[in-house]
Amino acid sequence: MKSLKMLVAEDEFLSRNLLTRMIQPYGTVDGAVDGAEAIAALKAAYELGKPYDLVFLDIMMPVKDGQATLQELRNYEENLGIPSPDACKVIMVTALGDAKNVMAAFKSQCEGYVTKPYSADAIRETVEKIAMA
Image (tube, one colour):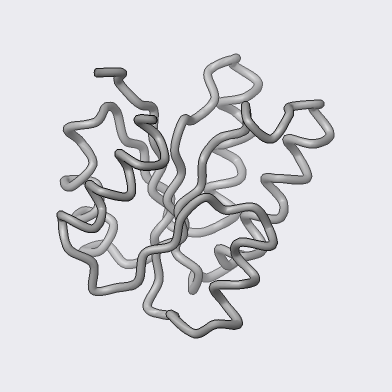
């Protein structure tokens, strides 16, 4: 099984730790407390030539929300000339399960969407479907 490099961007400490524990069996996990910190980590990883395989973005975060973070990430990857299949995979995690947020996330090219409260099974299935294929 491939070991993944993952980033969890979640402002709530307990949610960030819970999700980190759920995905640790799949590889290494870094954390970010808001979208701005996530963008800094994502750009640094690309600059080092070791981009993240999988990114979990909470939608409701301070400084920069998950939707804006996803759009900035995709613009950055496009400017680097990274084709969509080679871009890092993004899973939105949020309490917002309304159609507007779901559609906005997929329009910005996320690969998955999991609503809170999520189960370990839902996270495992999503990781395996998106990043382990």
